[in-house]
Length: 477
Image (cartoon, rainbow, N blue to C red):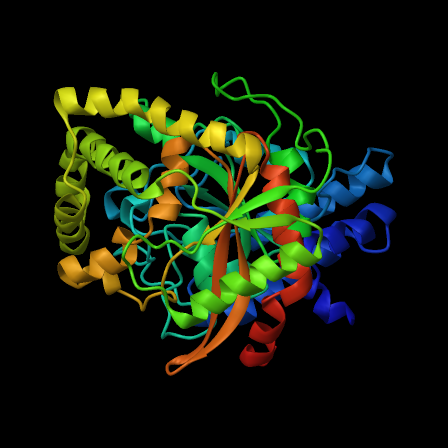
């Protein structure tokens, strides 16, 4: 490892060196910035370069530690922040031209928590308009490209975050997830993430003019996209630190109690009538075998019906969007996003009025079914998507495109409706006619047990390896 290769280090390795004094925060930050300037022009993942203030902060951290201040858990770790979350003094544009001058008056809890732990923000990453696509493109900042090649979408809505961290731009990438927006980019780019459960990470944007709808509050969560599962164990304890501005945050430790005996895993390949691609099938088998070899007790059994739960939840979310956001989308959105939303409303007919109240009540029924099931099976290994990740702009191709992108993704948005944690980890590198492509699987966990999902992801990663390594070889890095 040369001084110019510091950017290759994961956050876990970086903090071992920065906290021991073998590397300074300034050295790490400068190397991350150099990598960003080298890799980002071809990707457009980072759309606001914060090099100057990042270096200033890194120097301040070094001076503080030299003066006897304790080094934070993430001392000197370069991170990126998604442009839909407030960072003081910067625009929270959410990919919308009309919001380009909405300057955050203060940091959101997730930004504050990362900085309190010693992380250094080097840039802000791209998102689609209103952060409501599984692809990343907008009229304000343009398209983000996948570092594996332009045959694959970078995912969304945290597409800039996923592309950045896998290309080596920062060791950690902030993102958020209301229906899959951490896990879609992880799957697209071959990264690792865990969608936290409801209330796990404090959330609020000081710039917001009104409170979010109840489903946005209960389905949307903040999190991180990383290159390794170990980095989630390192960083998530800082991310979940309490913040009084989120009155529904649940203050619990990252690690739960150890379980007696081997942990049972429910394993399913059920795709509810959607075709299961052979490469996804192989990825699932690899993940299963990795967990078995790691000592998990894996049993092929279907969990409670995620199809009905997921579709009901997303239809309810569309009802809330129709009621609360459609006016903003029509007034400030591009023609592309307006057309996509019209197809969303066809794919997921919005549940409104009295029926919306009823389905919100039934949410408890779905959650109870899963809670009871997970008494026996604390983890559920499933596909994330039944097919390899889709091409850029697939969701602009009418009903068929939206159906492929979101219609089949019931294992994704069902977890948001249930409020359960779910990790997403690569378990295969597929060689397809259009080029190389990572394939991720999903591991859902009991409520409040994100740590168990990440442990399982680490076991799969130990078998498969970090997907960034073949990616960097492909990129010539």
